Image 1 (cartoon, rainbow, N blue to C red):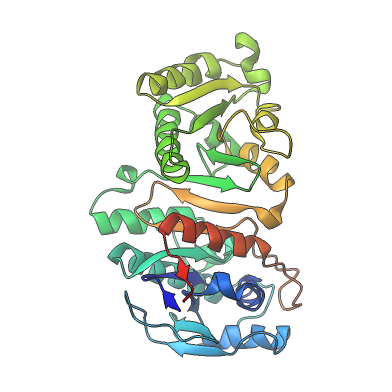
Image 2 (image 1 turned 90 degrees about the vertical axis):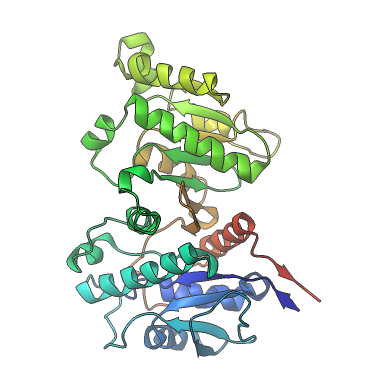
Length: 349
């Protein structure tokens, strides 16, 4: 068997959450998928999680930092110790230690990907309050990775625009804004932000589909403003941005009523969707319909970065941490998508 290089790094996530457990379950449940993957985390935390799950999980093996074409051990779970060894954190509890460990793993993997040492990263969930307690100046993965990519490129964060896409087999949606208050999200609906989102979406989906994607734009207001009766944003911001995108050769339609556009775009058995992706105006508008269709199939993809990054479509699930019941399905889907996006495939011989 020949394993393509460079590899995919799987970051541990918050050690007090379900990240360690679902990573180990993925190796146990989908060994073919996991070839060429290694965990970036803490060996002690992962060993504890393995104890919760039982010996059906392969043994852990500490490895040196992988490099392109360097072999990974087979039949075990490779672990790169990316953080200083420390006392184990309590499952299900917010802590500065947990936030710092989670962030350190992501930073290591991001820098390795930016150097070209690995093909990309798949991130297990972290907890925003733990990040904040650790003094990490970013509310989530997307912002942290954006800052790392900008630093690597020697540009400002503003010059490294990124967007969040949530995808499952039936629906894909990209967000104009992400982890901000609803008031701030409304203020972020500007001509420049919407047009930039459409450009980033077009380029990312064009690479994925091999053709120009059909993009629908959800309105901000109920009934997409009803001709100005329920708001002016559709007339003054969205329609001009869509017109500008079309003038640049993008296939964009809308703005459509947000309560129906996702149904129109859904690819279901016997019902091919009218669109390949929906651009939503704010976090919950876009994520609720995708998550309703099934969290276990959802994948979070960061668009606009000079690296591949995906993650499962759920959080740290502190209430399940340490119980061994967490579902690894969304993580496995995220790994599959990262492999497809990066070309990090496994060839059996």
